Amino acid sequence: MRIATWNVNSVGARLPRLLDWLETREPDVVALQETKCGADAFPTDEVGALGYTALPVGGTGTGARWNGVAVLSRVGLEPVATRLADFEEPRYVSAVCSGLTLTSVYVPNGRTIDDPHYAYKLDWLAALRATLDDADPDRPMIITGDFNVAPTDADVFAPEAFVGSTHVTEPERAAVRALVDWGLTDVPARPGKGDRPFTYWDYRAGMFHKDQGMRIDLVLASRGVRVTDAWVDREARKGKGPSDHAPVVVDLEL
DNA sequence: ATGTCGGAATTGTTCCGA
Image (cartoon, rainbow, N blue to C red; front, side, top):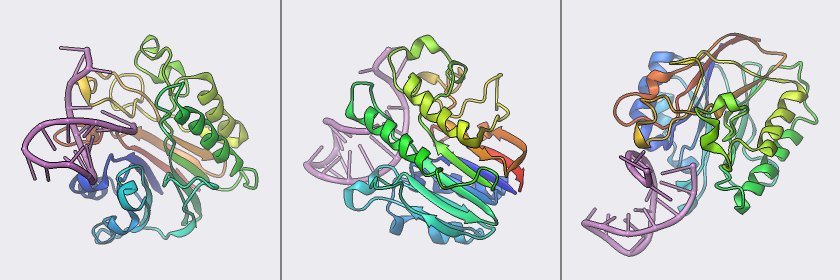
């Protein structure tokens, strides 16, 4: 089975690239983030034409312009949950696909350390950990998506550039470690370039071309999943009109 | 260089969030 995660930064703006990418990479199950559309506006028919069932979760009204997540599957899809606990923002969707419980997450950004959104981010991550209380790490499960956390200093291009910023603070990293300590593996992916598997590069200042990136899109897999390969699809970040994130593609056996 | 995007309203430019 091939799964992938991708923060597409608007599924509407990215639709031609998303469809091309699905045809090229042929993933069985895909976790999408930042779809930036309501569930009713999701391109269900377009991905359906390629054989995928979609489970989109989005906001309503003007709120539909932010956040939004989805699971696509061509190997069956049984919905499990469309929100995290009592958090209303569309940042969490979970489904069982051919025996694999896969959850797509778009963890709140946090903005700045003194912003209320930072505390909200930590609360959100704590709630994500709490969803595991009743789960079994020996069963096949993957939590994947844009965590907006770089787990270690090696996961940013220059740690000194991030002093005082979100994404690298100890509480954020501890929140991710709590997921790993429960029984998940932060799946190591082969880099698309260089020696580090960055997944995000700011659009500005040629950061992609300088490979000044961050590894913030993670695939956390339970012991019930055997990974045979994992890599950052850097090609999808190239060219005209890319997302600012690259997909992570993972081949696995259950 | 706070350097670029995407979405939407305050539209044909400006704002917010990332």
